[in-house]
Image 1 (cartoon, rainbow, N blue to C red):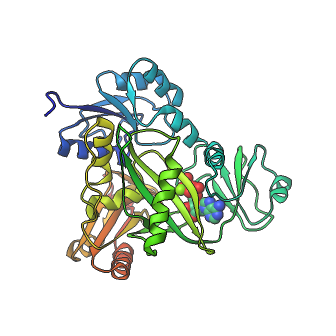
Image 2: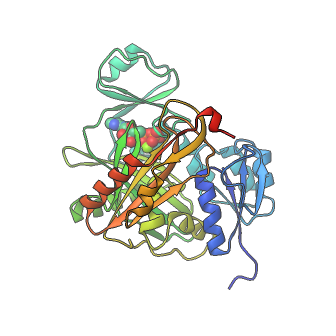
Length: 381
Ligand SMILES: Nc1ncnc2c1ncn2[C@@H]1O[C@H](COP(=O)(O)OP(=O)(O)O)[C@@H](O)[C@H]1O
Ligand SMILES: [Mg+2]
């Protein structure tokens, strides 16, 4: 047994950070958090909170001071700041060089193209215009190279006539998608890895709506998806959780969509449906502990996101909670977000059971009845 408690510093203190903090409590690992927001969700139980920006090298240095390893819970952490930590002898996971590739959707595509991996056809587009889009060909998908997440920064152009995003972009052929898949991979510090079962993602408005574990795939195709996920991570080193999003095309081909080198919304299912959840696994990996088992604890699981409804921004008010409480096999996770607005991710629910179709239908049914919207003004504190 290690004598002293391991200390992990996390750049970013959102919902993923809060779940890393609670995993740390279970594992006996101290989690220190850096975030700009004084009311960041991860702050409350963090061993130490540094108020500052993950884009600020000085704030990252303050986080690093007093921990054994620094890691991330969001993609847009300063690579220069992390690289400076490495230069000063701090362990950083994942590697800043890998994060640099991931942060730029074009660099990421080029990285994979150079390895001959299957991708949608793509091109760089520095100054998006109607002419540039026409030259690439429709239907296409335009992606801002930097800063997008949850479909922000992604614009579908099924045909000419839609005003392009004004940002340096990546253009891609619009893939006829049969299924969107995600593969969660845990990588340890010495080259070992554990691959979670392939999950299937139903996307609504370009973000995760319903997720199923396992994906409804032939075993050979599921194995191929896991292989492709591992190939996608080659040359992008770093301990911790990585998530690889794949497309299964209508023609039956697997293509890489994107990689992230952190815990991922799709991995929330592991909180209730796998022997080791992604947050515990991430901490184990970055702290140099052996990886835990990725085995599912139920034959089938479905996860549904719960996003803000209504039309206003304000203090969050939940309804329909009794529906989730009374359903067997359902776990509701409400995030520590005081404020809600339409479309804001406020929580998720997981349904575990015996049959994929059954858990999918039940997750949908509960998702429709659990609501979160802005409380009316007079009811607000
Ligand atoms: N080339 C493509 N063809 C068809 N749909 C796409 C393509 N690229 C992205 N999408 C759709 O947009 C969603 C968001 O795109 P993605 O690149 O994953 O951005 P984000 O970083 O916001 O998750 C995908 O999950 C998928 O539904
Ligand atoms: Mg994505």
